[in-house]
Image (cartoon, rainbow, N blue to C red; front, side):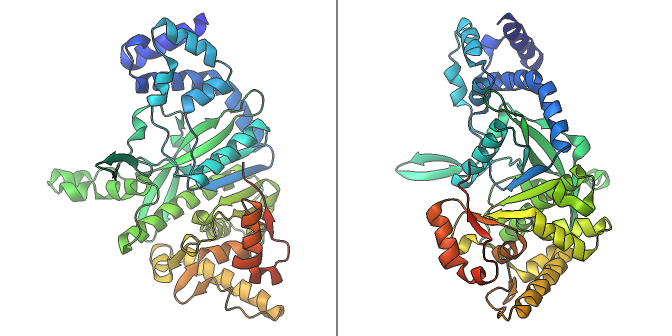
Length: 424
């Protein structure tokens, strides 16, 4: 008890030049974050080493709703009562931590199921690593005025981060005429009691060049920071409005940013790329990250693997969770937009479509309802259906609809591909 007291007080003074009793709820959350990360660091490092020595599952999701980090982690480490007693001595009710905003990394059921999946894996000592985006503002902050909903930016990052920045593992992301860095922030997934500490790696977009000095010196201030603003925009907000051309372009960039950074990271964890399915399996949480499949093939080919072998590896490694049967959520992209932003990815999708058509022709099945590229549109869900070794719904009735309605025509092609798994 005394060690916790002294340690928290020392962190408070070092970070804020104030005693614990003088901290705001957000500052207290930040102090507890530093304390917990220090407490678990050796165990976390050991669990990361073990993960990299065995086959690991990598979970790619646009959303994670992890909940109240401080309270959850104190409970999981069995120190909640100790910290509560300590804070009481400073006349602080531990419930003030409930005033601290949640980490705005998700929107609803999709993000909560992703969080449950990671929590369950840690509790069961399964090696699973999550990948997502460190959104600066999340979706939005909701308030009401005169009976109407008002939306504003959710500035959640002013409190404890509960993560470690890993500059040495940043990745370069290349679009057709634009490059930026994906910088990882690692968040521990601490199990209740025993189990293993897994990692949720969140990518933050940052410019290759923060400031063009000569432009700034010549008073061209907007141009001087244009590259930085364009890069940082990618991880600003979950699900940017994509009703217009620029919104669609930003949304595509955001999804490819997460996919490319994550696949580069996964490949770095695998020793033998020619047998990569023996060391990695990749789960795509809904349709947002399906672009990871052609990126996986591209990166393997870049490292000397033939297209045929990379294609075969992708079909062994990827699986896909479908969360909705609504047509608008089955993500389609303008063929021109992918060709403009990601020409190499587009060419790989074309080659994948040809492989699909060849298989269908051998089975004497008409390709029209299966084409990935159709009427100047790239159908990402069809890409996932073809390339992933399993596709799961998230409830019994949902899976029934997938099998018998939405994807019924695929049943003739892949008999046992669609399965039922209730996430979390």
